[in-house]
Length: 497
Image 1 (cartoon, rainbow, N blue to C red):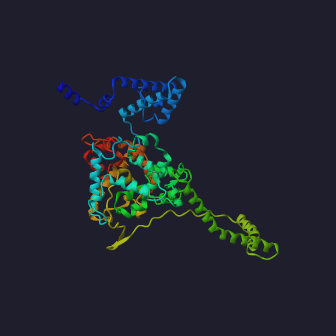
Image 2: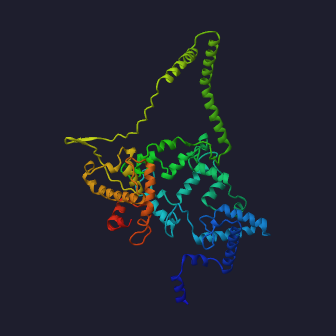
Image 3: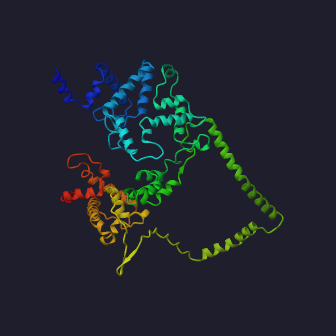
């Protein structure tokens, strides 16, 4: 019998382990309920929610679809409300068995701290973080539980108007006892209020109701275009904390000098399309007082402007020559003369706006002048970013397009790494011209460079998909040096492409 159990363990799979958690009758019941959901989908002619084998496609079947099914089931059958929970349990079982993840992740969802004992791993990481001595307190003051202890103390006793103890206990996951757990339940308002307190917002100030920076028009075309190009980041903080040679400074958010100002102009922190939650009543009074104070401070300027306009109007009515009257008279007399001259003379076309010029540092040595990029380090970036830098450069760091850089322009130690760049870029350029039959313009825009790389990526995707050992590689994150190394190991690839 023991040998049979060991053999079963050897052939166990994740699906079998999940199935073994349920009894045979429960599994049959779940499959029956899932079949009813599938039949409902077919009855609604929503075949995009099904896979090719007829089962539910959890990447397309959303929570709203399940709610539509639950409402339909309740209206068209004699089942009670509590029976619907059985369908919810069946869907949860199906999700656990299938384990879907959004396609945007390109990776399976996993735990924040890998391994079976997440608590131990978190404790080790925290100990490593606290390895440096702290003069304010000893290392023994810290621990995995001190985070919740300190947070609970701050929430309950940090002010005279803090959140309720019930909200704190529920957020921390502490037991309240049988009686309190029966009558004191979770509510969103209290939990949202607690979240704002724990964020460190001043509870006795109008800024307690502040919102995180967000775009007042989230569906703006410029915002959507920028989000598709880069993932937003705190660029100013990164510039202060990270060395200039870091690869992140070669991403689109830093190389495109117009993107960050354009996005900042659309950021707001007040109520627009995002409502604030967890706001106690007295914070609303603080907001009204702040608004009233701002308006009162603007009253003197409004009064002065009104008095000036009144005096101007009264002066004109009395026949006095005022500045505004003189200006209006000159406009009325001169405007017809200007129009007559413009119609009789040939109007020359307006000069075109000068192109945006980026000034690069120039150094002189020997009798020649060349662009020498002082302290140049070949960045370790992915292939897509390398393609952008090759054609467009980095205007934020005043660096020209990398294709214009010669071996004599950079330090000798960077000549060999940069030659790998040139080798890889020449290959990508041959792929593009072979696929499209056209050449890339002399000075392409960043958007054009992105479009050209999208065409190239289709052709080289199989090359970037797996390692020689069969491990799945994240093709969108492969470094340019690794890509050049792969090309050199497979020299005949260029002929096949």
